Image 1 (tube, rainbow, N blue to C red):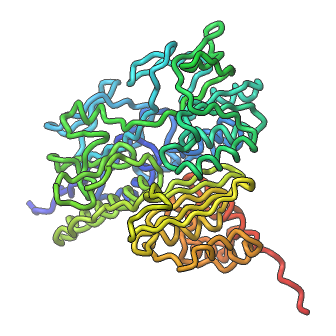
Image 2: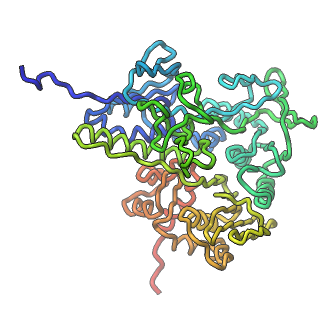
Image 3: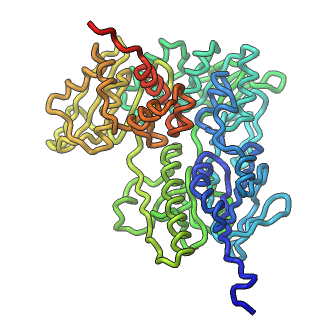
Length: 519
């Protein structure tokens, strides 16, 4: 008998557990392997919806956008392409010995490669009146963590009936939710620890300027506040009680107290965890060559004491941009490995996943705040290698702090100065030295702002989440794109946090502006 008769090449069984934005990005890389028949790909998600942009859930809740507009994947199209997509599939355990994931409905899915993309879950604070089960919190009517589309639906119903909303938590998402609510005509009060919002990411000077800008925008602030319980009226939320006895009244409560990685499945399978699932610089979990983790659930810490990349904090940043970069790295790794296997070539070697320092941007209309690196140094520091330049105009909501070491920008805070912030972020990411005259950077937000935009470097990053350069967007416009949605579909710019939408619109307006008449 012919040796090749009835011979079927092995199809690598790849199972993606979790169907959020990071998983959707990884699937894009693996789809060509499915088409060529080298991979049997299955993706499962516990939610009834396929991947959507969680960062914009608040915008859906306040009516600024729709659920359809933030979707990132079409499950029907994926199924038509040969991918097994299972929604509403709750994974219960991972049988590492048999390489099978078992689900709540009794089914089991075998794998050769398992990618954990389980994401994160909201932190529910210990408050009187709330269920304290961290895994399955039961929230009373009127209380939501605003994490998924079901939460967005609850908030939308409250907004429609004219509810007054209390937001607990002064982090990025809490501030953005409060501003969005006020902009859409809803009364909102932001309750937070410390003297100003963004206490963990911004210095006192910038924080006070930001707080003043929020008040001017109509956001109520309850600062230096510690919540201890909620009050209910006929079973529904009616107020947030503080430790001094004060009650912040409202008809709805948004819990924006941070997130924690979903690691229960990994722990149950005996995988090593800390804050997240511990992975090396190729995103493979420790001590199991068949499992990887990406996104909010993955903590990159190779365990080598001398590794400089792991010497600082390794807690997952909880940002969409780093997760997408991990998906790109892992997708490229898998494609290279499987292509090498099929062709008989040697293993292409590991692809390092070294995340750059986080840049945190507040995405709120009319209120700009950006922080990056370590900006904690005092302007009066006696360290001769560290210099701090600080400029403040509180009356006009502007503040800039630049920290350099040996002349290189290592930290920044920028409030109310969007063009200066864009230039500083570019210099920070490139590890560039600042000009000797630091004040020259402040002029970007002066009368020449429009000219600065026109002269912007095409290689400069416009969309940080997707890593899209300004020149790439310009090329898309040259190719016929005319709207933000069309640019996003063509380049991925604007599909993340949405903070670059205004810059995309500005480029569109610039591109299609009528030519000046000849003199």
